[in-house]
Structure formats: structure tokens, C-alpha cells
Amino acid sequence: MIWEKRWFQFAILMILAFIWGSSFILMKMGLKSFSPEQAGALRILFASLVLLPISLKQLNNLKRKDLRSLLIVGFIGSFFPAFLFMKAETRIDSSMAGMLNSLTPVFTLIVGLLFHKTALRWLQVIGLSLGLAGAMGLILTGDGFHFGSVNGYAFFIVLATIFYAFSMNQIKSHLPHLTGVQVTSLSFLFIGPVALIYFLTTDLTPVVAQPGWLLHLLALATLGILGTALAMLLMNSLIRHSSAVSAASVTYVIPIFAIIWGLLDNEKVTVLHLVCMVFILSGVYLINRKSRTIVA
Image 1 (spheres, rainbow, N blue to C red):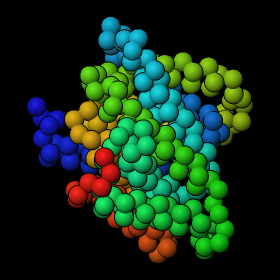
Image 2 (image 1 turned 135 degrees about the horizontal axis):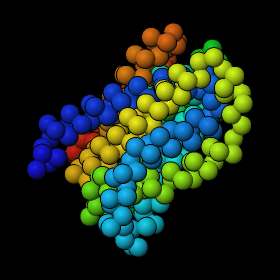
Image 3 (image 1 turned 90 degrees about the horizontal axis):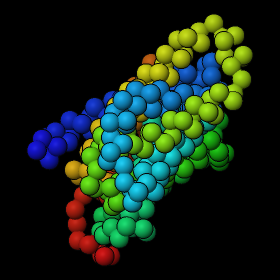
Image 4 (image 1 turned 45 degrees about the vertical axis):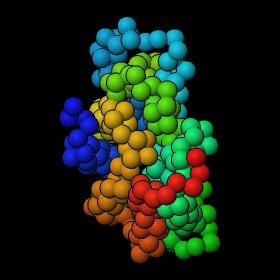
């Protein structure tokens, strides 16, 4: 099967890296007219709508025993992170958001160790330390990009990566019998109506007063359809055919695309930012390398 081929998995990782690396600039565009809450709801809503035909076809595969896991994947893996990232990007550059997103494999391993009996290796201990050190470096760079002032909005992204970690481990441990298409479509079937109801309670008067709101809506539609629906279909399929930590290593490459888009949008990327990112990516690399197991 082609999903079992390493070269194909690598190709999917590169596609995901480009899609998600570009997502941060689309979030930034959407926030020019919409509030973080509206933008987050629209992202989920567009993804749910495009997945709806698939979701309805997969209803026969919905089993009571899978309901809890699908709700976790839907709300913890997609719904809440969509809002957290939007909130963070009101005060954080898209390039920095991409760097912090690289923590996902670190927390995926931690969650696996704590709740799913994942084995721990020596290199992973070093990798965890490096990854967390790099993340703290980014968080402690406030205005002016100097150590000493905490950028509190960075914690929204850290929390989102922890949510991603729980979702990925849930898929690998409790939903291996479902395909990536089934996991994605069925989980979005639950969160789509919630996003719609929430969006309809918000005030759209300030939105339509913005001259470019239709363009910004298009950016959010692109984010929902490509950056959420398509990307989650690919990611959940990849998790099924590899490890959760290996799939999460897509964040090796995401920061590169996020930084490129950020520079094109005149965002400031400092040497300190890059050093912290190297720490995180070095940690992710060591987490994925094989060495002697020390904890079973």
C-alpha cells in the first residue's frame, strides 16, 4: 500500500508543511476584518462544510465505542486550537507562531509517555530538554525581542500544541481501525454545528464596515478548506500508517514556510528567534532518532 512507503510519507509531510506553514499568514489576513473568535469559528465552519458530503457517507461507520475518541479529536485536535492560534496571532507574528508550533512532537511524546505507555529513549530525553528550552526562549522574547519580558500570547500556541498532542495519541491508540478520512469527517461532523451556532451569536457589523472584508473572508475560507479540511485528512491518514510522533515531525519544516511568508509580509525575524528555533528542531530530530530504550 502506498501509504506504507517512506517516500510517500515524506512527500505528504512536505505538502502538510507547506499548507500549515502558509496557514499563519492566512490567519493574519483574516484577522484584519474578523475578531479572533469569528475567524476561528469560520475556519472550522468552512472545513466542516467541505467535509459534510464525506461525513454523511461515513455515518454508517460511526460506532458508540468510538464516540468519545472522535469528540476528543474534533474538539481538542481542531476546534479549540483554531481559536487559540487566532487569539495568539493578534499579538504574535506568523513566523514566531510557526516556530512555536514545532513543539507539537515534543508534547506528543510527553503525552504518549504519560498516558499511552510510549517507550522513552536517551536521545529523546535530550531532545525534550532542547525543545522545551527553545520554546521558553521564544516565550521570553517580548517587545523588542529581548529576554526578560514574557510574551503571554505565546502560551496560547503552546496550549494548542499540547491539544494536538492529545489528539494525535488518541488517534493512534484508540482509532487505528478507522481511516484518516473517517476520523476527520466524523470528528468535524460534531464540531461544525458548534462553530456555526457560535459564529451566528457574534456581531458582524464591524466586519462589513471593513473595506477588504470579502478578501479576508476568502483567506479564512482557504484556511478552512486547505489548511484544515485537506490537511487533517492527510495528517490523520499519515498517523494511521506511522507513529504519532513521526507524523508530528511535520513541524520540522513548517517554520521554514512560516518564516518565508513572515519576511514577505515585513515581519521581523531576529537571530535570537532563529537560535531558539534551532533548539526546538534539534530536539524534535533527537526525539525521532532511535536509541536504547530506558523506560518501558
